[in-house]
Image 1 (cartoon, rainbow, N blue to C red):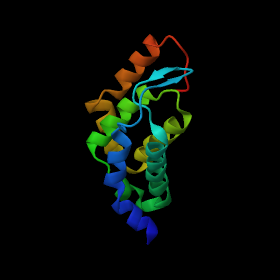
Image 2 (image 1 turned 90 degrees about the vertical axis):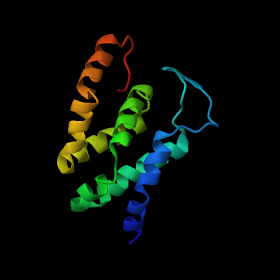
Image 3 (image 1 turned 180 degrees about the vertical axis):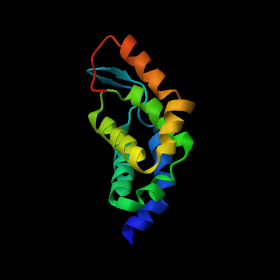
Image 4 (image 1 turned 45 degrees about the vertical axis):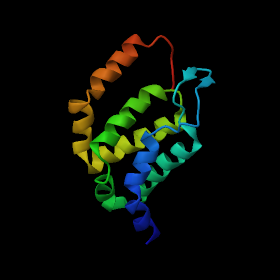
Length: 133
């Protein structure tokens, strides 16, 4: 019952994840300056999202159907900003993995509509420094 209630709040979680907090200023990390830091709350919301989809097991597709294309576009953009944040990248990878199994339409959005493959190739060809991503 509590997992079902959590699924009700997935659109709210997506909104929190994709909208940076105004109270967090730029942070200097070893990888460089992050203009829009992720913050603990947004990272926890992303973790709740991926864990709730994971725990839904065979109903995962239904859970993932709550994600909108705006969220997919925003999280893809965030990958290039938070390329050194292993926790963020781990949850992004998990969402991609679940999408491959339960919602292939999301992969179509990412690869065809948002040019994920081209952006990744561009990133790896132009990136001077190695990173976790």
